[in-house]
Image (cartoon, rainbow, N blue to C red; front, side, top):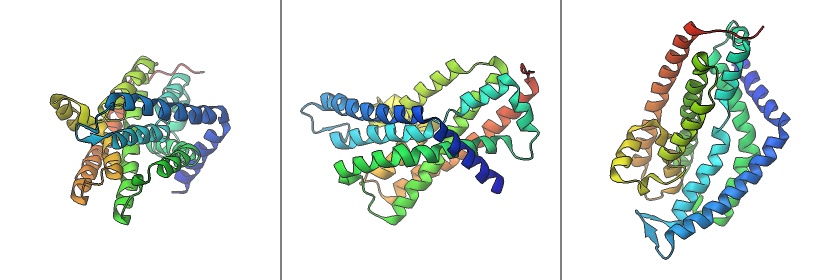
Length: 264
């Protein structure tokens, strides 16, 4: 546990060192929120509701997803691919702790930094502008926090598998870009899943991506969703957490057999 906390602190301190990236994220977040407002305002036009969602709910889902992206995008795949290319991974594999867990700890440390400096202040501003964001019960608030933790784990496992591809290609740029586009689309972060054609909704609901953004944001924003519905969504997240942890570990262990080190 102590080793895990040290790795979390290391990830947090690393994020502090990259102050330029921090300010760019804040500016980018503000621009995104403003652009999303005007875009979806144009989409709705004179319509009060579309696909069962009013303008405010739709905008808040897109805005909150943009805020959560900041803590979910921890660039695990890039750090992992760099360690594979440079041969650093060999030194880390012989250390007396689990390699995947150590990567998760570092990513969690970076996520905490972004949560404190970007996500929390932005959510506060959104709350002041849209008080309906407020969660009406302690049980729902705790469930939302647990849902965010599951979403973080699912996203980490996906990034970890993309980074593992570097064992075979030594470059993950294309795979990372494709993963980001697929996750953004099928998770409901770009467009609410309710706007999808029925066939795409069925596909999205069978994929793990909706468990990253759509499920936690439904718990937060859809007040008409009762606790039973929230728990069903959370159950889906638990399922995907278990499945993706198992798959990512299996994929990594298999990829180790083809390791080639280019470093000195």
